[in-house]
Image (cartoon, rainbow, N blue to C red; front, side):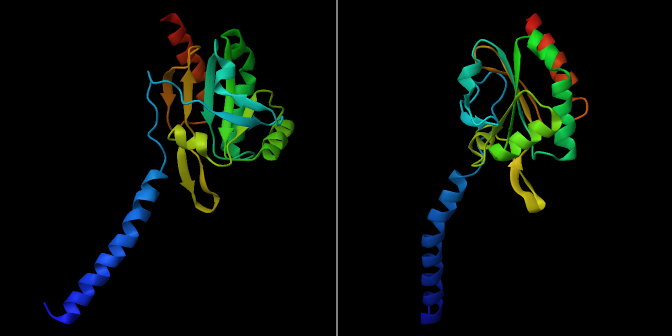
Length: 186
């Protein structure tokens, strides 16, 4: 091999040596795999719209409708939240708490709840740690990485019983209520 060929090989080796750790780091930062039904629900602690700390373990002994949504005060997210609020009494009767999570901050959640008269918990996951733990991150153009519209139905013992992926906000609350009724029969 001539000197020029050796120089190219040396440069490629240097680039690979520098790039390999960066590639490994980027792979470790990607979203976790979405937990499946039957798996323990990943624990979390986040701030609510009231500025209070809320953990998944706070809901032990009741069902949790853990829904992820992209952005406060957007059309689809408002429809989904209104439908959960509309059906709040039915969830309460089934001993189920509704908990929404997005990457918006506490102030945004507080404004959203005030404007839309929402009474259930909305949790701020600005670092997207919980969104990632539930494999529910998506990239939306200018918004960047946001929560995907996924819902996890968690039983009173903290086990995921049903997963809804890429939900349609219009019929979603009814779908969750039906699933909850089916699971309660078992």
